[in-house]
Length: 109
Length: 120
Image (cartoon, rainbow over all chains, first blue to last red; front, side, top):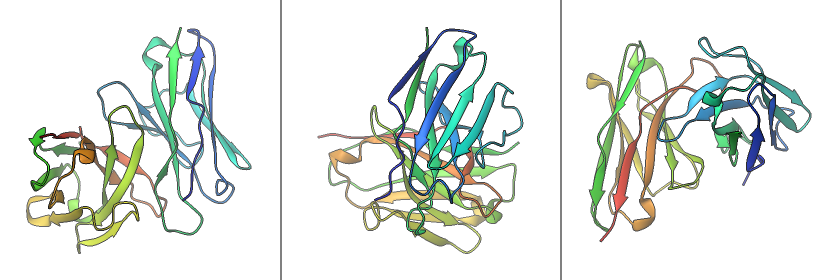
């Protein structure tokens, strides 16, 4: 089955930049989406179609894509950004239109 | 305001049946697909299936096909996820989520989650 691979954890100091990668073979052909999940809460969409930001999401969240890797960047990290982040995309065959990445825990030091 | 409100936490024994719900409001319930996502304790997100309440067209992830049933009652703007015989391994948080109004596959609004605990 199709897999999206993320680093298990990323640590960053307040005010610095956090970069979270997501790798998958179908990413050159499929858009990626990013969700933030804080402890005990439901996921929240923070990036759609690789780099678009939903209304209400701070400008410090941005997304990019290059080949088989997409990246979520959090610029000027704040303590409130500490959370789990999941990428999501689709496989190329259409069998699994919603595949989630393995998840990355962002820790603000 | 778009809202998805899920039913409360459940504690069940292995072999029992269960149906949990997800009520949508603040938008046209019949015009958007609703998906279900599982999150096992301390683990990641897994897509289970999706339903279009307008005509009850339903798709399942191969991993969950035959294990659960997804349905909807458009007259009360509610989607359901049900099990006929629960297992301990069904213990998890279950989220419903609205598919965005687009041909691209992602969820723009999520319910608060329903915790299902299966234990003897």
